[in-house]
Image (cartoon, rainbow, N blue to C red; front, side, top):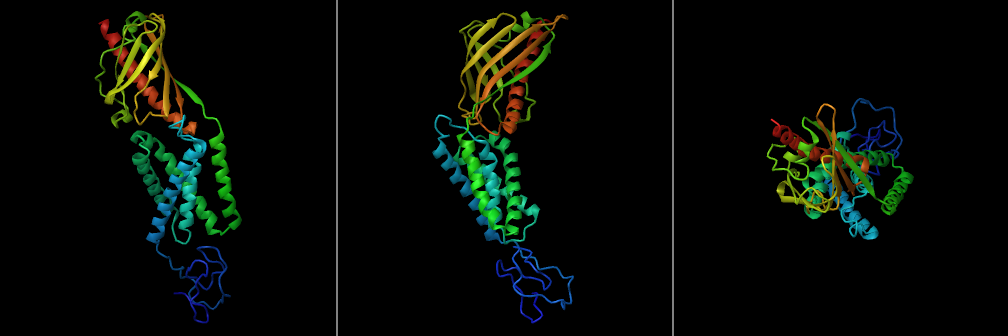
Length: 357
C-alpha cells in the first residue's frame, strides 16, 4: 500500500482508491487528494494498485439497468397508451434513449470500479442479452425480430456506458443532474409525436416467356418446394409456399400460404389480364414476428411485354411499419419483403419458362 512521507496510507476519501504520493487528484473519481504530497517518494515508477472489479457492483448495475428499462416501458405504455390501438408500436426512443440511459445507469453503478472500455462494452452486451431474453419471455417477441434489434441495442447501450464513464469519472455534478431531464424530455417528445410510416418495396425480374404464359401463375401458383436461399428463412422466418384463388377477377379471394402454416387472406381488387393484378391483404397471420410491428396492406404484380418476347415482372408490396427508428428497421423490412418477392417471382419464372419447353 502506498504511504505519505509520514508513513500513513493515502486513501481517497470519496471512493477508497489507494493513491500514490504523486497523485494530486484521485485517478478513479477525480476528487482532490486528501493531503499535500512530497517529492521524496523514491519509486515514482510504481503504478497505482489496480482494484479488481467487484462482482456485486457489476450485478447491481446489470439488474438496475434492466429493472429500469422494464419500468420505463410500462410507464410510457401507460402514459401514452402505445399498448392500446397502437399495440406493437415501438418508438425510436425505445431503441435509442432507453438503452442509452441503461448504459449511463450501469456506468453510475460501476463508477468506483477500475473497468476498461472493453469491459464496459462487454458488460453492456451482457445487459442487452438479458433485455432480449426478457422481451422474448415477457413481451412474447419473435426471435427474428429480437435478432434484428440486438445490434442496435448493444451499440447504443455500449455508447451509454462510455458516456456515463466520462461523466462520472469527472464528477461533474451539473452534467450528472442535467442529463436525466434531457433524456426524459426526448422520450416525452417522441411519445407525443405522430407515427404513421408507410413504405413500399419493389422488385423486378425478367422472364423468358410472353406475358400470357406468365399470367397463368400470377393469381395462384403450385407449391414451392425449392430450398430457401435467404438466411432468415433458414432461421425460421415464415416464407411463401403456395397461393390459391377463386380466379383472376375483381372480388376474388386469394390465399397466400407461408411456412409454419402462416396464412394471408387477400382480395383481388384490380385486374388487367396479362398486364396487372392488385390485391388487398385482409388478414395476416398472428405471427410474433409480425403482430403489431408490420402490417402488409397491398400487393401488386405488373407484367410488361418486351420487344424480344420476354416479360418484365414487377412485384410491389405496400406496408405500414410500427417499429422505429425507421432508418434502421425499414432496412430490415425492405430486405425481408424483397426476398419474399424474389422467392415467389423466381418460382413463377421457373414455371412460365418451363411451360414453353
